Length: 194
Image (tube, rainbow, N blue to C red; front, side, top):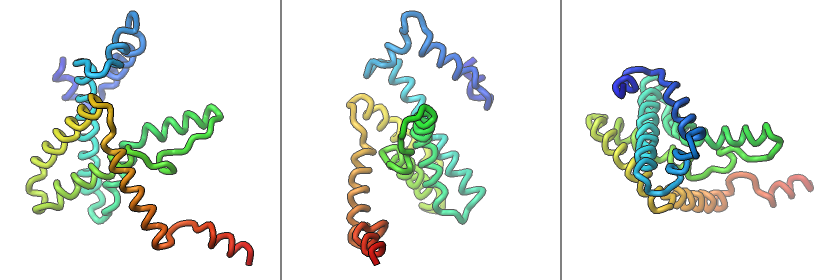
């Protein structure tokens, strides 16, 4: 039974059962348990979700490297797509209801930072560093780090990637001002006036 989940690519029924248990369980038991911070079942589900996230990300980086070896930006973009897709679907859902909400690309957050950071870490350490000879060790190490960081963030209630994103955004904003990158209000007004 458990082996069946790892042997087949199509396990949609597991998602359906998880949905039914979470939202339709008697007395809302599963949902109440999953809402409790530091509950063992919640931590188990979070660890499984984290494991799925990092292995999917590394698999996408491997696929991108195999199909498009010359494209150096693709792993970072795949990381963004994987970790920001839920925000994209939330924005589409909000727009379908008549609400205005920006997509993750318009308002980059910690999800985007997470995707870029971990995809580039795996791409460099797993494939570039030492010619990729340590790929398996790097994959295991990054998987353990990702899962441990997710469990720590959930237990403590912090977002470590948000802190990285704030610092990166401050540096990029300062760089944009210093080098006059992007739209310039004073330049566009003077151009329009002339």
